[in-house]
Image (cartoon, rainbow, N blue to C red):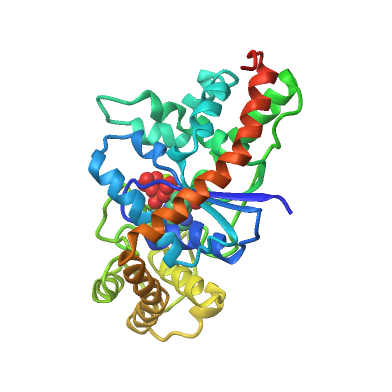
Length: 325
Ligand code: ATP
Ligand code: MG
């Protein structure tokens, strides 16, 4: 089995989309030596940021990953900036990437729109992401649909680098989590739930259960009164069914047939969300009592990740034409 990596950027509050799109697939497939997870603090510097907040959230995200079931015995867990290879390989890969290629990325276009100052790091973000992936020979990258283009770019960069300088990298491919690849905002079901856009329709993993319930009960539904799973024409309803399906491991279309009305469905969704989130919050609170233990896990993880990354960076440097020290 190849290595799998998952990165989470501390750019906002973690939400249920992050849980089902990234954290749960990771927790469900932890294989010693094969599973790598990091808090991508470098990526949090691509948009306006508050230094103290990024630092606090980095710790919060690491704690949340542990609370959600990341097991340091089976998964290498670390903070991206603690492993120098990420920034080093980033630069080497920039020298194998076209300006037009990164300029085209949908996420760059969306995030740079209507901004007076766009950081160069926002443009090159997918190149750093390619470095994150290629450092660890990660063949499978389990991400939601919104990251597909970036994983494809990482693949293109790897293939181009290999063709030009010799076979250094393993071209990755995206793996799509089977259920809930994309969880939408509950008040705006045509926009995805997103941590950098703080929205009323977001289900945050640290929201108290009453807040989660309230958010679900206020969710926008669609015209009509039958419960059907129809993402194109009834996106609000489909999103609720998708969330319920993700929480219970069932099929959204089958679930639709079991409800008589919207209210009954919303109550079931609220119960299911709270049942998933509450135990995670309990473990989060317990870990919060001992931040030194979390920091030690992160330090050990950075040492293990650094050992793997070192080899790949040295090989890439040699291949691209740098004299070894
Ligand atoms: P940002 O607004 O900063 O982009 P985000 O919520 O989109 O935040 P990312 O850091 O871009 O989160 O992605 C973290 C992981 O969560 C990725 O694997 C991404 O595919 C997944 N993810 C993000 N949003 C959703 C969503 N709404 N549904 C499912 N998966 C999601
Ligand atoms: Mg995103």
